[in-house]
Image (tube, rainbow, N blue to C red; front, side, top):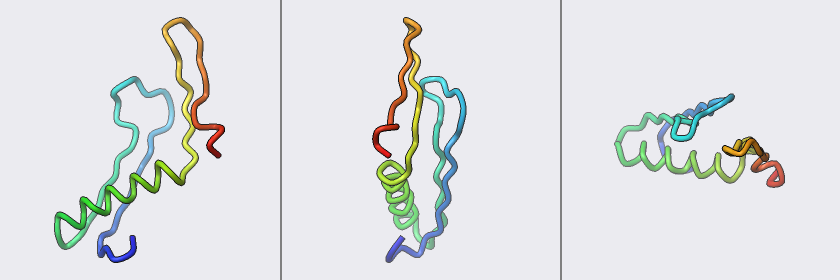
Length: 72
């Protein structure tokens, strides 16, 4: 986390997640609230751009497709 003195952790859920369910939880501990928020934001951005997370979208008509597989 570079200059931050925060410690962070994240957990990404696996399995069937209904729309609107929490998919990822990020926590941070830092001497100051602003540092903790910045560390959480940076970790989420790193996850979005650096971790291959695939999801299978299922539509009401029964069709499904994998999303994110081509990004790896």
